[in-house]
Figure (tube, rainbow, N blue to C red):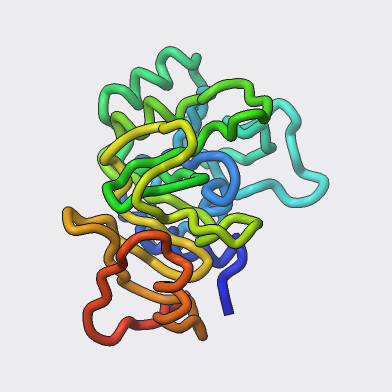
Length: 218
């Protein structure tokens, strides 16, 4: 079975390390906040001016004035702080974010990413993604393996407008965990019940497969 959005977020949460400062993009990445391991402490940063994001609020407890960059209501943790966007982007551009988790329309085997625009559709702008992919120490993409038409999102060349080049390190999809290496995509893990053959078939670029590929532990 392929993972749902929460499953993808739960697997990505395993990549968090104690003391990390982490920025979570719009969409699936925001769900990672709900699965931060209890034995570590991470600080979640939002480019609209919040450091110290907690899990999503429970029903009836949301504060409409407290939102993340995706306009979703969030909670804070003890020690959280608020500031203007210029200071927020100074943190990002200064290289103080250890990990960024982004959604994506397309990712190439060279680590290029298209994540902000589909031609013909209205968008408000690139948001903070361009700064994040240029400055974060590590980029993980959270996405489905294929689009709604069944076409691969992991490919040799992005057809959509680029957000950044040679920046993505790891991709977690509903089917697999894939590393971007200097030789291309390398399969590290597969979703429970998903075969290597299915992953290869649905990947639009050569996929390095070495030995037995373990199932994800969620």
